[in-house]
Length: 122
Image 1 (cartoon, one colour):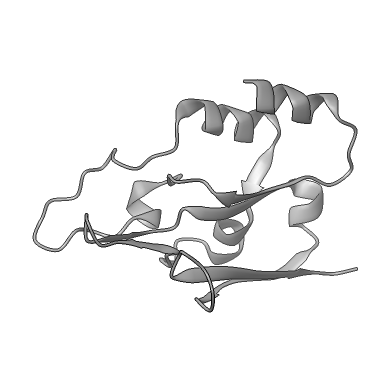
Image 2 (spheres, one colour):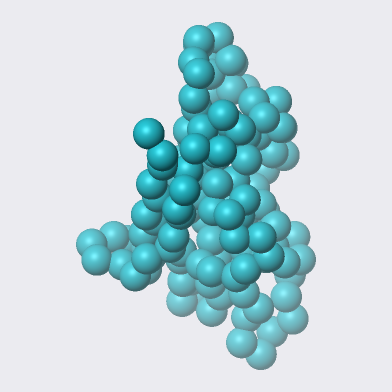
């Protein structure tokens, strides 16, 4: 993957990859059940190459790292009647250990119903 290769070729101490991933890491934790429908356990998962990049770069999901098995979501699909946590911040362990707080807050001005807040020790 070109994106993965460009990151690997760079020198960095701390690395954050963040944004709207349009998929989830774990459907059991990051996707709600549809009202009146059985849950599709594979639907909405990130592509394998994203998971490989996360593994190759030793990235952790910052919010999940701090919140364990907690359920919280960043996007409501009216079409599928499901909530998902598709907006994520991944960081290498060096920076992940410096982040002291990471929350999903109510939307103010966003196409997604929630936005993230994070802070780190300096």
